[in-house]
Image (cartoon, rainbow, N blue to C red):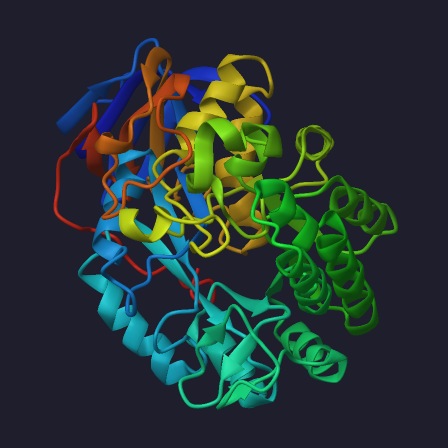
Length: 465
């Protein structure tokens, strides 16, 4: 046998166990996981002695802005950054220009991204109420990874672009969808059996409170939180859960940021409903108290809240209320983020720092290595119906592998990021635990920090796995 790749002497990590093993890979597939030395030569061999071999890490929440505002980021650079950070697959969000609102735009996006992908990728579809309700079934058949609804956002009537700062009376703008439209979206996605993910913030409350803050001249981070309080997320989470209970939709709450949301999700899960949730490193490693030190780079939506929320999120990870962690990678230029807190856009780089931060949490005993395997690989693969082909190290599955040196200590630096934008809240963070190899279907795309190949990523289509 001529093996394409052999990984020797590593410690395999799953969500249940760790064990020493060699992995033998041929034609992009894991052919053997064994303590034995199998006969045959290898085109490439990696000695993983002293290192940990994880199922390939995923980032399920990435905004590469491609096509669209590619002066901020594009898919080439976002997947380059992903590979550099130990990520073997990303799921691209649908609020591009044009959006992924019908099968034709989905196929155009597949064609657009195919030649730029350093890692494998799934593509989300967007729910735009009555504007594309009749397209959701065909988007499911086409192979989208899931459906996303930006709850509370207005939509431009001609371009179908989301309007993030809606004001009553805007020209050519469809106001945020009412409960009837939302119910129809939940019901239609439920028919597909796929996940419906929601950005959970109550726009009406935010507009009302923000107007009050602006009227009194509020411009601080505390003022920002007064205008977008915990209640804004809590109200929408409760509404989403109620809609899911009624329609049978598989509801997923995106970027959970509050203690109240964690408790509402936990209660729904205890009642037996298929409600899942994610959170992001900025909610786990930052709090409002860090704003004076970090500055406007940490402005995201939903905004980073308080220590009590951070603690509740960690508890939600430990007890399984929160299924996985992802980045919400949403870069902006230096110039756009260098301004008044109230006027600058929300979002920052995250795909390259996702795994290092979670590995640091494991190195410091906040979570276990088994938790990392679950949070970044196995749990998302199962929830998006692509397990065990993705998210596992089983024989016969895709050879997506992240090899980690848990002893490496280093500093996250903005100048080292591979995204077009270098805006990050983590510049100067000291971390322990580093991805040292990123392997996508048997292709070594990153080795010891060096990117070693041209783009090799392929579409992940849950309909064909």
